[in-house]
Length: 108
Image (tube, rainbow, N blue to C red; front, side, top):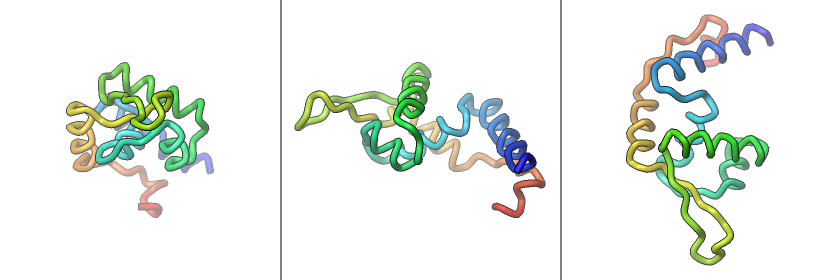
């Protein structure tokens, strides 16, 4: 288990060093690249707690990678979508060449 966690930490370091986002931020960017979702939909899709999802969204907003929109039917509901900068990052993520640690090679 320890080796797996260390392997994922190395993958995350590559993301941070090369793209400026961590692993969970990358997952949210991937979720929002082609569709608009609410916080609860993002949390459900990624199996994260709402509070953690909110923190990730706030971080991505601070990095100016997504925008929020009020719901059409319910103005209290917020929806999120990647902006141009976020979509550009999504395409970089898709083509990013990870140096997969040996401990994770069997998983990929």
